[in-house]
Length: 503
Image (cartoon, rainbow, N blue to C red; front, side, top):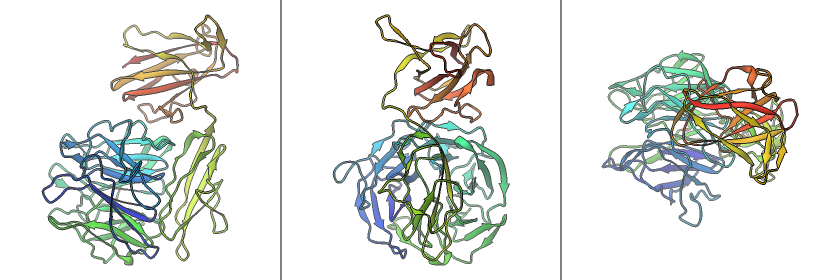
């Protein structure tokens, strides 16, 4: 598993010559001319892993799922990236931590894309069977991976070892293997708010049937490099531009989908059984600057949250607080002093070097909320069986336990889920039933209190009102969720009704 972050290239885990997943990790520094320094061992994984999904963001490195010594895994490991490139929390050699939430199922050979602060895992293998699902989760401001949702859209057919890339606002999925065959098809999906995919489009087929190719977005085109064909490792390099593929007339035998790139060069691991992996590069591809990857992504964030992004070697990031064109004269993005989000609006970033064209812009849209470290939870909502479930009366007031009640305008309620649940949330207020005195707005958040929960249609349950519909269907994994109720009239101490029931 190989990934680049800033001026460092990391290789993590992998199978040894006997096919046993290893835990070792190492890093090398990338020079501004694309040269690669010596490999240095660093903090190993807690357990061996191969065929996992790997990415880096906000000074953290993540490995999701994959195959361990005991078989496929649902664990998400993450660790800190130090200023010198060394990995690990704490003193040398450092350690990795496990994310608070696992993947929904043990998943291996899935393709990963990271876009606008949200992770997408495409296809893969569950219990030895390829799947057609696309799951996604938001990366919290504190670095934790949030709750996972299954996108309503499926791939055209199950597949493992596909490749993904984001070009513009579309997620591309190419190749893969399933049912004893290797695929050549490529699909794309429009990426909407909160990770909702729409507008599935079958694109031009790959020039070869491939699984585990490298797929890279390069300015307004895609590159497909290497991978495994039906009989052998491919040495093809192809560019997708204007809706068609063209041969780049290069021969690079490479195994994907993990790749690192820097200053017009592509780096990858070329592996053969019993041979120590070697890193190579080819400047003839002349890759453009990557679109900056920024954390946190769009959406509701804490007020004054710090933005984090690390450019490729030789690149500089420039930003502005609107969607106008970013030029060389704009401010230089820097972590010191930190760039912070202090109000609603959008931030646009681009990467520049001294000679080449700028990257495409990364545009992020934020809303902010000041929130104390703790919230006062008025009560825990009970999950009821669907038969006979009725609305539970709720009053916007805080009881201090001594018989005193303080009228409230807003209130937090906990929803605690112990096992995977298929739920329906229904509520009512004065707009629907005069028995209730409030006119309410509701938001259901994940554990971070900022990421809105998505319903089964992929829509965010954020600032909804009872008059907008008859409820929401949710598929929730174990964990704590928080309902934020607001009296839309600005009147305290009013009442509304709500029920959470199993479907």
